[in-house]
Length: 385
Ligand code: PMP
Ligand code: GLN
Image 1 (cartoon, rainbow, N blue to C red):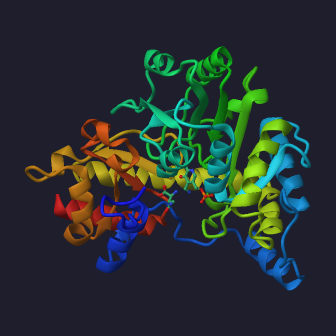
Image 2: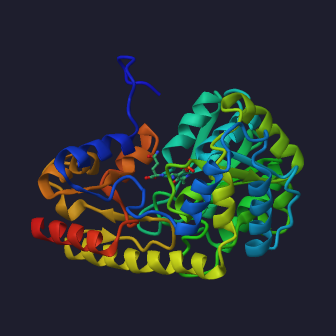
């Protein structure tokens, strides 16, 4: 987790955002929106502060948010949850992931099957638990797993199959067949499914089907989400985990010693967000469709090969046609802010070092910015092509 000389290594997101700030580049790197969240949600946070919701919340979270999360799971996915036992509020999805992995894993013989490229905190949390990561590649250009490779990765040592659906950084939404296979495999080796669904409302072309709703999945699945992406409040760090009482109890046991509780006044505000009408949720997916399509067009015009993105904020592009001699995507992304005035993240930041070569020309662009910003980024990229 540290640099070879023992110093702190900033995450790729911090590094590229710092470069974007220094150069005044448009930041299509770190995935955060450039607009505030819905006014009802912002007002609910202010009202909570004004009315004195400023001390520690109860251990599992503010009761109103626990209730709203349960209502949300029922409303969108038909899953009835006990808010007192099957829901836990966390400091973002990041803490939910870390607490879940720390709760379930116990040393190097415990393996976590994960789709690679993967969100950077996964490898760090598995390392903190001292466990072993077993990557299954999502290869360009399909960016979908090969079922034989998935089957081969799962063994008696597999404690967790870690899913991220919709997937960061690829924009993949896993097919029904892949999800069924994951559930079958988890049964076969008695593994827990941990699913990170922070982009659940940013699925663009079809309704989202959480893996926990598949037959036989719910009793062995911890589902994780967050208000950050859905309500454009990434700085609030309100996330949650839902699942069977026993699993959520184990996650709570760890969470209480990581942060104890978090962000009291933001919790009723996220509850207000989760209760917004259906049009709000449909609207954010529609907006994302427009932005995704605009970005893909801009990238193609600039000479990139672009993989279709089905969800999340992200689109992956192959920069091979634009790389200078001897340059890989990591060097390209470090040069791009100064060269062109646009920032993006190399996919190699999301893969194990031994697999860098396979992903070395791929770049992730975040389309969570206003259309005029994506337009300007496209103009800059095209001008440099
Ligand atoms: N998982 C994925 C896939 C993400 O992209 C992110 C980044 N937002 C997180 C987890 C972290 O979410 P949070 O900010 O709620 O901790
Ligand atoms: N989830 C965001 C992304 O993937 C950023 C999170 C972070 O900066 N750690 O871009």
